[in-house]
Amino acid sequence: MGLGDKYVAEAIMILSFSQSLFFIAIAEMGDKSQLVSLAFATRFRPAVVLAGVFTATLAVHLMSVALGRALDGFLPEFWIALAAGFAFIGFGVWTLRGDKLDSDTSRRVTRWGPFMAVTATFFVAEIGDKTMLATVTLAARDSSFVGVWLGSTVGMVLADALAIWVGMVLGKRLPERAVKLGAAGVFIITGVITIALAFNR
Image 1 (spheres, rainbow, N blue to C red):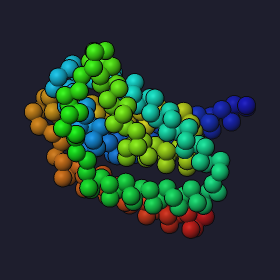
Image 2: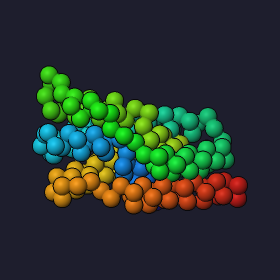
Image 3: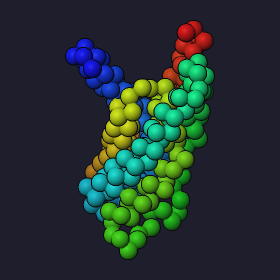
Image 4: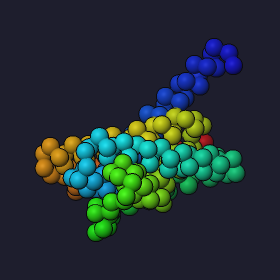
């Protein structure tokens, strides 16, 4: 790989990282797994909760990005862009609908201690969740495996850290309705633009 190719690859990875961080952080706002983080932070040290969230997210999003890249190898670019556009609109509607925390999730503690309790619970909560599917969608339309993987993970952790900070320091949650409307708007607008671009390639 020449020096120019190396710079191009690095630029693509940085762009992928930034886009994934942004969209996953938006997707996480008001999501069930964010509520899980907030609930655990009322019982365990925030640093332990975030460490568990980070570990679980690394694992789940590694699988998500691998799945997304596999789909990219089977589907033409037009259909990937079209599917991504409708998926983004779907995520917007899902965001408006919102998620609720299961009544027993915040009480779940295992014999392995706080870190493993958070990691295991968060891992299970993320399987099939909106942020996992959003990561699959991003990976299917992006060429940087590492960029999407790390960006989506950092975006998730930042969103959960914000929820924990607001919940612990201010004693209240994020303004739920405003967050939902803003996040849903970003996804729906992005979906419409993505579909429009797919037909104009």
